Image (cartoon, rainbow, N blue to C red):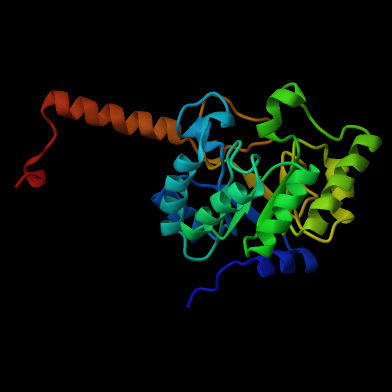
Length: 266
């Protein structure tokens, strides 16, 4: 029987000084392969708004769309923890709707949800979710859903004062009950300092090697999404070229009469 990755598993990684991995997935087959590869957390990131749906920002995706992708990904995963990124305004209106929206993701197969921010309201939401049996992953540093108020894609925590502020925010999240915290676009030394002063694991998204885990968008890792490549993303494959090559060869074979062959018809 496959031993599933749980909140306890993630905390044990931290306590034992072991690194763990996080990759995004948006469909059944990709989630299945990522899970088989041994990745510990599969994140249905709201990044799918751009890489899968073609929106300009993550603001455009809604709860109904995230529900569809959560169902698909959850069906493909056997071992990894499945975390759904709660979309813009899906938990900001009131605590009741926040719990309902997050609870639906658990109902559809997610193990936990991820929400951004640290305001007193967000802390109240986290506490209520945890009380309801819904594990929460926090997100600090650069928070994409606050893109407009942050004034663009800006590195966070560049000074000691700013780093101390993020640590203070992280400690509040920790107290509210999160099981882990994503640190996005934070200088490596700052992320190291924050990580060393927290009990819960940190997950780096462009925050250096000293966090407890690393997360990347799978389309960046596979070389599938080419509109934009973050500095912190590493390209392990070239799916764009593979897809272009396969599609071109199919197109040529159809037009040249080489497909289907005798073996490919009834």
